[in-house]
Image 1 (cartoon, one colour):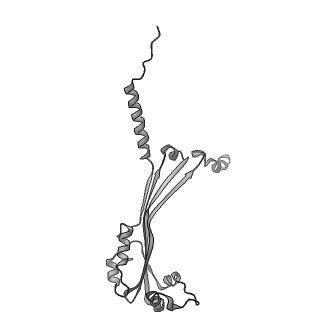
Image 2 (image 1 turned 90 degrees about the horizontal axis):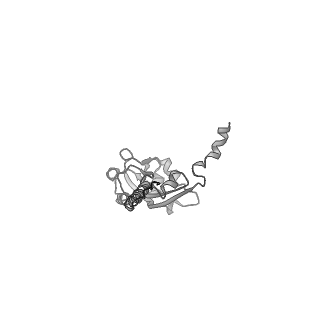
Image 3 (image 1 turned 90 degrees about the vertical axis):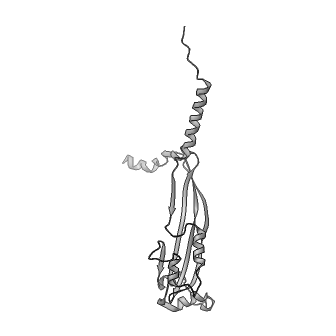
Length: 198
């Protein structure tokens, strides 16, 4: 008489399916995540914009600029601009009359070395790999969501007072990077093969 092989009970099958589902769901959490945050006193695009919008040309002093966080000696990612740097940013040609420039910018260019400036550049981005864990891990198909914001501003100063201010940037960054490699982990072997043969 042959011994019969016991069949898996329905409860055992259900537990096995549940465990497999948990493993699959947990795999997505194993995908790499990265964050790039440029140090600044502002945590959001709106915070940075609000600070710059408080600058009043011909009224705001350099001491008040420091209080707003625009100080290259105390705040990271605020660049101190010389007159030469400013001229390179605004290459005025002979065919463009100075009278058409903003008053503050014109006075800065006319002031020569008495004019200096501050360039602000801050950003925050997150990179999250999404999609199928095994396709990503084996390098077949990789999808990365990029989110965040960036902000930049320019402040020109003459005689200890701000005379010109402008700002811009990207309040919302939403990008998706997709990489497909049909051979997966073998994709780079073609480049490595000549070295291996030698």
